[in-house]
Image (tube, rainbow, N blue to C red):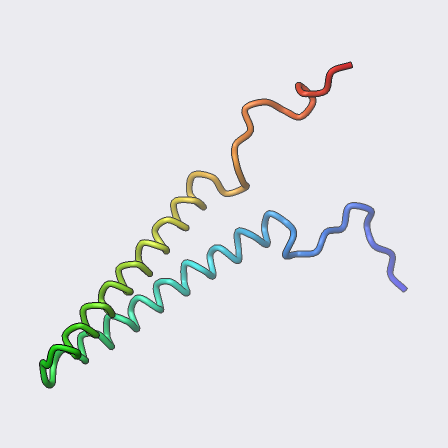
Length: 96
């Protein structure tokens, strides 16, 4: 039986795991936005009744939300990849 390192953490609880999951979320947002744009534009082409126009507009709005989600996650990864910024270390809070 293999022995584990004392500081072994599962991949999903590591910083690299979170970064890779956020990258997958960006890819997912982009693919969803492209899909919603295609479906919305195709819905607006054939016949234009009120409900079809509303469906196309709401589809385009959902695509904009997907793009905004991807941009916000990208900014999070770009400016703060490892978590929230701490001004003081934990050792400064310990009073002896």
